Length: 325
Ligand code: SAH
Image (cartoon, rainbow, N blue to C red; front, side, top):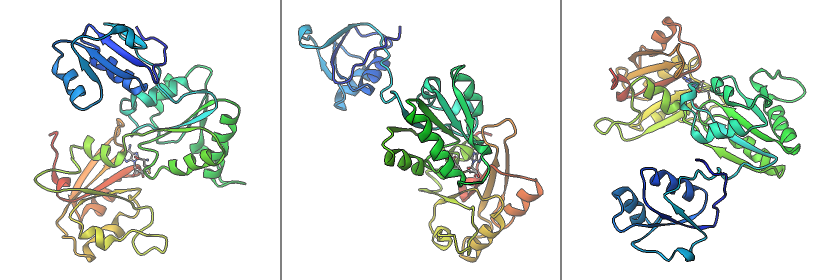
């Protein structure tokens, strides 16, 4: 039974180990408790936590020495950080609500206001309270403010009224999601802000298509860049030549329209024309599609297949793999 208690700063003794002891220990640690487990023969999973210094183990404990003694009980301490008047920046993962984290889901359930984008996992909004206000900022037109300023203003305005404001986005909010700017706006305004990281499409889109961004036999890293401006554009700060020589998998977000320019530049900078390449569109949605080709043909192939945004391009040896097939 979930107990609505705070264990922050408490010393907790767990006796009578059961099947759910591990999840209880993790919930307590997450809530800021110091945990001791009384057991003469602890299971390996519990011993491992003690070996890592996360908990104390003892065969026999002095029960009166602890703030709380739990005898085989299961408690789910409340998640820290949600109080009155605050902003929670939630990375929702790529479209599929199943890829939202438990913390993200908790935040949506607790929200007075959910401010979401077009690419957020919108099906998860069904978990919001019936009286929660849902604001779609994907629709904000350019006007007196640039959209980001307007979004920041909306977050602050609702939080100042004492509301729990969830800012729900696709993927991870700090990966090309302007979550950093929103966090700074809250901080500058003195509004408490927390972040719930999300599963970024830069990893999830390839994964759902059976492409591991690293593979022990093939590549020792991956680079994630934005392709929203093409190579050579004065606004571009990406060193494509360095990426061409990096020996890492290259993952390009926001690069559907610029893919031909990007692949041409990579080849001009020495990346082999026959390097495998793939584009994964609508990852996590029923409409998901993957096209595979090589560096010299991927832009044409994607265009021919009418691949549109949102899509992630993957360039490198791993793009030839489909480890799920
Ligand atoms: N914060 C997001 C990225 C936002 S930028 C994240 O971490 O995933 C938007 C770009 O992300 C899109 O142009 C596309 O390249 C990628 N993207 C987002 N959702 C996607 C999806 N469901 N499938 C494929 N690519 C996606």
